[in-house]
Structure formats: C-alpha cells, structure tokens
Length: 313
Ligand code: NCD
Image 1 (cartoon, rainbow, N blue to C red):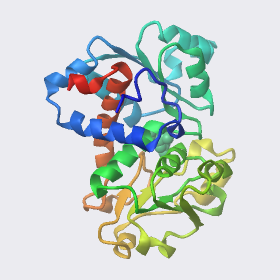
Image 2 (image 1 turned 90 degrees about the horizontal axis):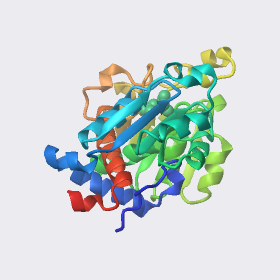
Image 3 (image 1 turned 120 degrees about the horizontal axis):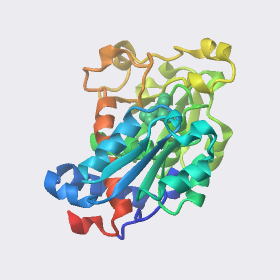
Image 4 (image 1 turned 30 degrees about the horizontal axis):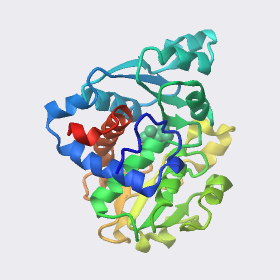
C-alpha cells in the first residue's frame, strides 16, 4: 500500500480509513523490532515543533521521545507562558512562525477547531495532540493498536468506555476509530456526562452503541474496559464536578465479576478511576498503552516525513 500519511495533517481520526490505520499498525510492528541505528535514518535531519497550550506529560514526552528515536530533533514550548502567546500573539502568527524552524508540528490547544484552523494556515503538517473536548486522534491510534496487540483483533469485541463521555476528547476519537471495526460499544457514565449527540450522529448506524449508568449491568459481556478521567478543568461550574467525581472506580472486585481476559485501559492521567491494586494484574494495559504510544508516534512521524518509510527499514 502507498504510504497514506506522507505530508498529511492528522486532525481527526475520522479522516483515516481502516486500511490506512492498519498500514500504521503493521509498520509500527516493524518499527518496534527495528535496529536502533536503522531507526535513526527515518528522521535524520528533521525537526519536530511542539506547541502545547495545555498541560501534558505522555503526549508531549512521547512525541519528543519518538522523534529522538528516529534520529530527529525537537523544539517548541510546553506552556504558552513560555512563548509570545503570553504577550497576546495569536495562534495563526505562532504557527506561521514555528513552521519556519521545523518540518512537522504537534499542537495541543484548549479550543475545538484550533487544530483544523492551524492546518489551514500552516504550510507544514500539523498533528492534533488534543483540541479542546473535540478529539485526540493519535491517542485513539495507540488505543486501537494496543487492543490489536493484546487481543489479536478489534472486530467482534465488546468495549465499554467509562467515565466522562461529555468532555473527554479521547472518547470521541476512540468511538470514531472503533466505528471502522465490527465492535459493540457500551457507553457508561453518570447522566450529566453522557456522550454528546455529535458522536452518535457521526458514527450513524455503523456499529452498535448503547448507553448505561452502571457498569455492573454489562460487566459480564466486556472484553475491554476503557476508563477515563472526569475532566474537572472543562466543567463550567465546580459544584457540578463535585457531584460526579469518583462516580466510577475499577477495582479487583468489579473485575472478578467479568470475563477472565477482560482488559483495562486508560489514556491517563488517572485520578482515582482505577485502583492501584489493578496495576499488577494481567488485566492492566494502561502502562502498555504508554509504551505503544511512543512506537505509534515514531511510526506516524516517520510516515509523515518520508514518502516510502518501508524502503528505509
Ligand atoms: C488525555 C487528554 O489530554 O485528553 N491525556 C492524554 O493525552 N493521554 C486524557 C485526560 O487528560 O484525561
């Protein structure tokens, strides 16, 4: 297959077909076993720009580690206070500045639509690392890749997405990504945090989706539990957050009532949704997600930067 990622913006997971995602997964398998020296040829002489207008640990550092692992370099800012944004510079001018110094940019921004807008003004590819409550496409790529690695397939699985389905952007990208497969999705949240209508509208009748208030109703059917953090910073009223915080806690007792091989995932950070007692069980896959996130991002960068990355392997 021709490399579908070369010189392309990564704004929404909806822009990518199942076969394009599978290109990324199979190249990631190769990347993971590639000799360190060979890997460095994939990004040699290239520079990644990081523009982070919101806090991040994994996304920012994994992009950075991924770019270094393919032999490239990284520059940018981890907080807008460290840039002229603090002086009032707008997003378009910031992007049109940084593009002079780099080959590809990763942008995280609190506003929905900011990444699409940045891609329109930029002459270099933009990778969306989170656009408000809207999407986080590379998180979904690594989530799907983790499911594929652990379960050997995505088709036929029953997947619960639990927690803050209203404000969690990883939820939207994951639902759209999963809609390329024959999965069944169970959406579990308190009533105030139900998924926004746009998600159901966007997937139409591609896959079966149902909404639930209590995970115990469906636990026996699940192959994957994808827990999410209640997004405190996105609540217009802090009292509303207080009402729903701690709504769902995944612990060993809950997992005992489910299938033996039901796995637990989380984009992290967690703030109490998964008890630490789960960490050392074979169910916990959130640390594997962190590792595979770096692999996927290295592959994605190599594919955006090279017309034919396979030739370099
Ligand atoms: C998520 C995010 O920023 O959307 N973090 C991440 O990138 N893994 C999830 C979150 O903040 O809850």
